Picture 1 (tube, one colour):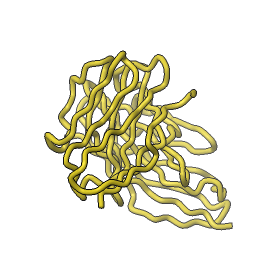
Picture 2 (picture 1 turned 90 degrees about the vertical axis):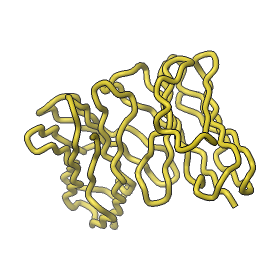
Picture 3 (picture 1 turned 45 degrees about the horizontal axis):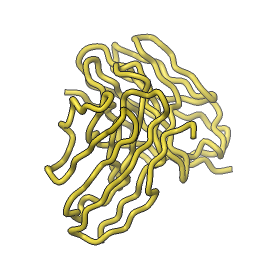
Picture 4 (picture 1 turned 60 degrees about the vertical axis):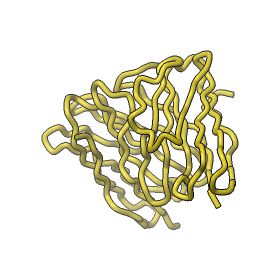
Length: 112
Length: 115
């Protein structure tokens, strides 16, 4: 089937620390991969995406590389800020389907 | 507005009542999706519309749930005879078209609480 497994949270980091949130997937065909972010009190927003193997999505200092060989799409940021505190969701869009499959979300708290 | 709009933002109702949730997608977006986010869980897909038709209703959890979309725009999700397990945040999203490369744009959700 199609599923996304995401790193369990919550994650607490100090400002300027390096961030990795792991995401692995199971899918048929050639999925697209997404990271969505939900800031406190706000709706889900698309953070970045990658549509084929070896693509790197990037936005706001965050990056994720679509690794077909390891079926992974880990989210990274070199230096987090307090404003990055949010819940991060990894998601998969499967060929031939229209809905997204979401991970359970990882809550990130960045402390000054 | 420029984004997906959902109303009401919060709804508290008694068990057994019917509720109607509304979603106004981004103008020009032909695809519309409903998801449910329960406490501590990821997003659960409910139903998808392409235009006014719903080719995929596989995610609706029971026959108490129904949805419609009129004019290729506004959609309503109706839950009849609500139960406490229906308490969740109901999210609506829209996208320009179908296909797995189209990102979905989400509204702020309706937080539904069943007493």
